[in-house]
Length: 50
Image (cartoon, rainbow, N blue to C red; front, side, top):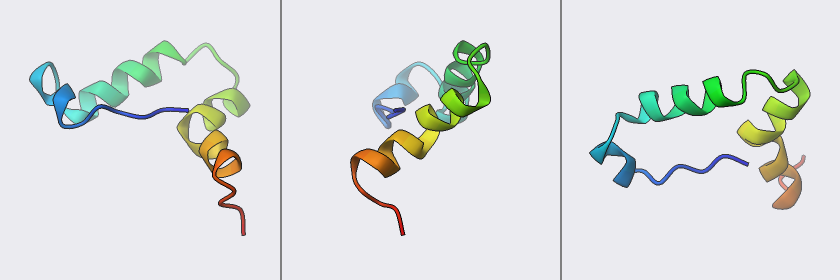
């Protein structure tokens, strides 16, 4: 799952730029795996389902 180190990341790039780097890095992954990285793993791990 994705988790930023904001505000520390601001020393090197904006938050948006940091997210763009992650998006680019995982662009070759399936949509399902990208969805897991961006939130679905956290929903499952922390039992946040309705």
